[in-house]
Structures are given as structure tokens and as C-alpha cells.
Image (tube, rainbow, N blue to C red):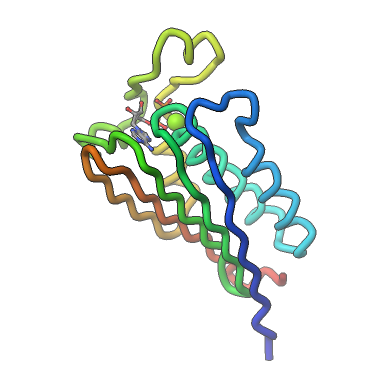
Length: 147
Ligand SMILES: Nc1ncnc2c1ncn2[C@@H]1O[C@H](COP(=O)(O)OP(=O)(O)O)[C@@H](O)[C@H]1O
Ligand SMILES: [Mg+2]
């Protein structure tokens, strides 16, 4: 029988902090590798955490990322206190972005973050409330790939 290995860690994300952009997702990638998670799972987890982290940095005041790992799945939950998303379906469509010219200068704003998060998750949930914030829940199954 497979042993239930579990791991959990929280990361704070500061809105507007482009200097430390990508730090949490980089740390997550290294942690998952150290835990022995299969590379194809690590890669997908790195993509979803990076895109979610960047959206907090670009669009929200502050946020928190919660990583939890068990033998059968990696789960990443990102909660922010930000403006929320008025039209989630529109925000989810490929190429849609409200990035500022300054953000586009830095290479952001392709409008592929949320679509890529959905594509790389086995289970994806998004809840957003205008004036309150946004919560993303991503689950990536290990599908028997050993931890
Ligand atoms: N956490 C968030 N808070 C508020 N708005 C968001 C958040 N995440 C995404 N959005 C909105 O959804 C749009 C699409 O996001 P995304 O697909 O990641 O593309 P991009 O980051 O390149 O703009 C963003 O331009 C923004 O308007
Ligand atoms: Mg984005």
C-alpha cells in the first residue's frame, strides 16, 4: 500500500512587487522536486502557481498561496484581496488582458494566464467577488506517479 505523504506550506504574495515576482512559484517548484513529485506534475504545478502568483502581483493588493501535497495530488489555492473580476468568463478567454502599458513593457499581458491555469489543472475552480477578491483552486493529480 502507498503511504500517504503530506506536505503543506503557505506563501504571502505582495501586490505590485515585480522585484520578487515569481519567487513563490520558484520555491514551490524546488519543494516539489525535493519531495520527489514526478517531473510532469512539477511542471504543471509550476505553471499554475506562477500564473496565479503573477495575477496577484499585477491585479491585486495582496494574496496568499497555499500549497498542499499528498501522494495522489498537488493542490494550490490562491486567495487575494483585490478588485475581483467582473466577468470571469471574459477573463478566462484566451488573449483577454487588462494589463497596463507598463506591464506589457515587462512582457506581461498576453492574456493566457487563466487559460493556461485551467489547461494545466485536473480540477480548476475560480470564485471572484467585485470589490472583495479572487480565489483560485487548482488540483493536479499524480495519477499513480510515485512521490
Ligand atoms: N487575481 C486577479 N484579480 C483581479 N483581476 C484578475 C486577477 N487575475 C486575472 N484578472 C483579470 O483577468 C485578466 C486575464 O488574466 P490572465 O489570463 O492571467 O492574463 P494577463 O495576466 O496576461 O492579463 C487580467 O487581465 C485581469 O483583468
Ligand atoms: Mg496573468
